[in-house]
Amino acid sequence: MTFFTHSPEETIKLGEKIAKFLKKGDIVGFTGDLGSGKTTMIKGIVKSLTGYEATSPSFVLINEYPGKIPVFHFDLYRLRCKIEMETTGWEEYLDKGILLIEWADRAYYGMLPEGTILINLSIINDKRKITIKGLKTGRIKNDRQREGIKGTKSSST
Image: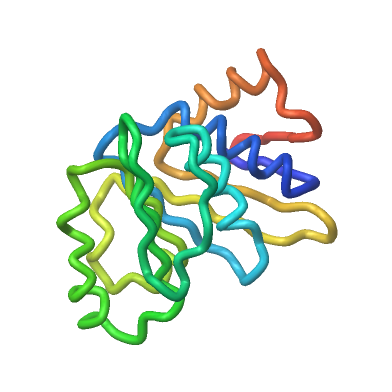
């Protein structure tokens, strides 16, 4: 499913909607160019699930947000090799909560298990195209139609 947002606020709101459908053990991989809105969307997910304000973990690799379901926010941007990823101990987090992984396309082959939810964000003029794969997105679409995500359009892909 593909969504279009026209502002950071709309991207955050879409993240909040996505959060409603995540459960313990889910892994969500985010891809997209610098400035495409990966951290912005994660802010909505983290706020909805834990009440915390998310920040980019680029310099610390991981931020942990406690809550009913803990959220672990990884940023792979600075990783240079498979060994660096292995030393993070990321696998220890798999069953403890929800993993949000920025720059998931930098993960080494086979790192992300089957069933990982993938969200790609791209910049198109002044809006963001957000493509979601692996999540039962019909629930988001129906929720969007009931409550509305102001200015957000969706299409099936």
